[in-house]
Length: 127
Image (cartoon, rainbow, N blue to C red; front, side, top):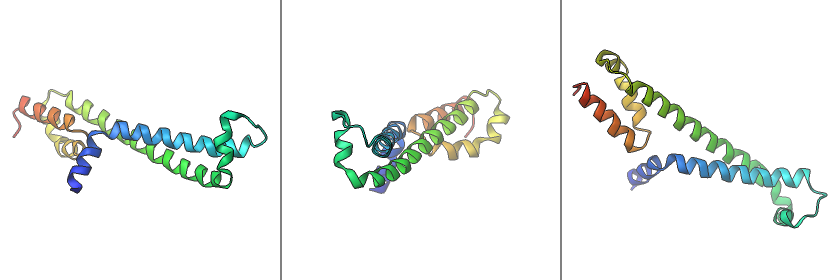
């Protein structure tokens, strides 16, 4: 059961991290708007005023969620960039030097990158 959940999260990490980042940004905006724009009475911000004392928690929770979303986005793009750069090489010796790190990194990326690594190993006749 846990393997299926992890596999699902790994496949859709980019979409989920973008959604988490947007949710964090929205919650942070709600908290900041409540603290800085208390005097404005606009209909667009009516929901924020109804939450009144919960906005302090919303701000804190929003900052945490925003940080988590940004971390996962950064982590995904960093790993993706590393894998794509290493898969461009045509030299078997260079590929073999970084093979262990590549395999460990690909485990945390969607299955598309595992297939790309397998194709590259086949291309360079690595078993």
